[in-house]
Length: 196
Figure 1 (tube, one colour):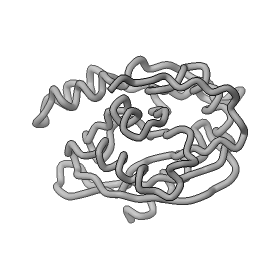
Figure 2 (tube, one colour):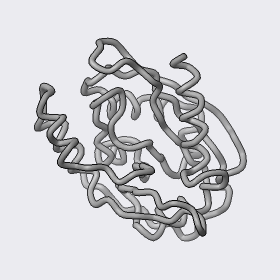
Figure 3 (tube, helix red, strand yellow):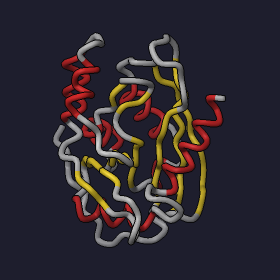
Figure 4 (cartoon, helix red, strand yellow):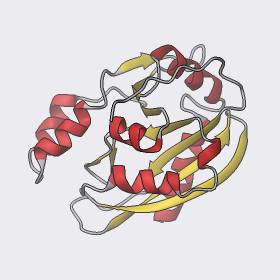
């Protein structure tokens, strides 16, 4: 299955965005972690929440997130998925290219600080399935800098199934209260609350 780059004719201020983040957990433990998805229209209108669980340092993040999206009542209205990075529940790596193909939606990974990929690669070598995890990280593609709002600190994004220009426009339209899309900011708050 080939990944198709989606071109947006126009990006409306009410574009439906799904922001996804994980809850807190104790590193080097066994178990599962909550994954929360929050649907927003643009950066202003909250529409709904979805949730799943993934294994700490496991291999099920891509599959479980895809199932969460596809089983959601909001699925048909969604236009883009925004993840808080590509690693969840420790080093359970989301393959954003595969996720984009499965759910047939553009996927963006957003981080506030530029990751040290060599440091991450070293940490992955301490876990089983290093090659699978590292390949998923490589499948996220090029990391590029975006200034979401004038004067704000830049963020770093990776994309699958979307043109860079469109990704930047979506980031700017939906980052209304911070330098990340509002759906992602709220997903982080809810996921953190569930973990407590």
